[in-house]
Image 1 (cartoon, rainbow, N blue to C red):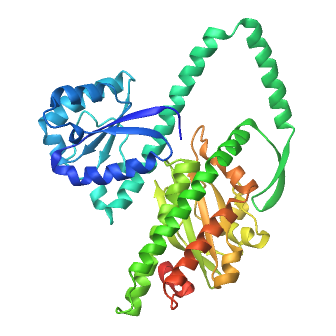
Image 2 (image 1 turned 180 degrees about the vertical axis):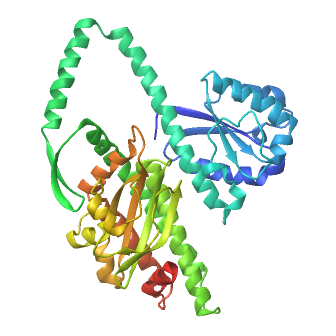
Image 3 (image 1 turned 90 degrees about the vertical axis):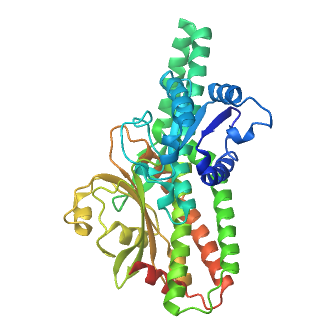
Length: 422
C-alpha cells in the first residue's frame, strides 16, 4: 500500500449514476494497491450545503475523474462549475484530470478535449461487452496515471530535500559513489536469448531498475491473477451449458478463455509494461503454423496477423530452446516469418512447453511495444527473460485450464483453443 493518500473526486451526471457505481467498484479495487479515498456528491449528508461540499472536495482533490457522456456535457453544474474548476487546477498542476468516456457523445471542442482519455482512444465504456471490459481498459490507463502522479510527487520532494541539504562537497562525493556503483553494476553479466542466439550482456542501470520493479510488482501480480482464476472457476461452475448445441458450448468456452487472457494481459500492462503502444498475441499451432487466437492492444501498427511458420519464426526458436526470445533487428530471421513487414516494434516471445505436453496443444504468447524515442517499456523484457516470466504465466494458464476441466468433465481444451483460432 502506498503511503501517499490520493484524494479522488468523481464528477458525473446523476443520469449516469449506475455507471458511476460500476466505476467506483473498479476504483475500490485500485485502492488495494494505492491509498485512495474518493468523493462524489452522493456522499453529501442530508441537509448538507451542496455547493460548499462540492467546492471544498474538488479543491482538495489530487485526481478528478470526469465520467463523460451526453448528459454530463449538457449538465450545467457538471460542465460549467465542476469541470471549469478542475481544468483550472489541472493547468496549474495542482491535480490531474482524467476524462472517462462512458457513453458516446457528439464530437466537439470541449474543455477536456486536450486531455488523455480512457478507455483507449476514447472508446466509450458502453461499447464494450460486458461493460466491465471497458472499465478494465480504462483502469489500465488510470493506474499508469496514478503511478506517474506519485512518481512526480516523490521526485519533487527529493528535489526539495536535496536542494536543502546537499553541499558542493557532498554532491561531489555522491557523484563519485554513483560512478563507482554504476561501474560495479555494469560489470555484472547475464545471459539471455536474443534473435535466436544465446548472448551475454552487461547489466546496465536501466535494466537494473527494471529488475527492481519486476521483483517489486510480481507478488501482487500473482495475487491478483490467482483471484482472477478463482473468479473464473466460480463463474464456470455456476454457468454450465449442457442443454445447448456443441458449437454454442465451444463458442461460450472460447469467449471465457478470451476474457481470461484479456484480463491477464491487462494485469501485465498495469504491473509491468504500461498501456500506451503495447499489445499481445496469443497464438495456437495448426499443422505447423501458428494462427492468432487472441490479439489485444492499441494501436496495432505494423503487426502481422498472418499465420507464422513454426520453423521460421521466433515462436519456433523459443519452443526448441524452451526459453523466452527477445527480438531486436535480426532482419534475416524476421523476414522469414514476416516478409512484407517493416519492423516497428520490440517484442518478447514465450512458448508453453508444459501446456503442450499436458493438453497436446501448442500455445504461444508475444508481448510487443511500438518503437518510440525513449521507450522504457521494453526494458522490462529483460527481467521477464532472466527470471522466466514464461513459467509464471504458464503456471497461471494451467491453473485456469484445470479449473475449466474441473467445472465440466467433457471440457476439451484442444477443441476450445482450436475453435477460437479459426
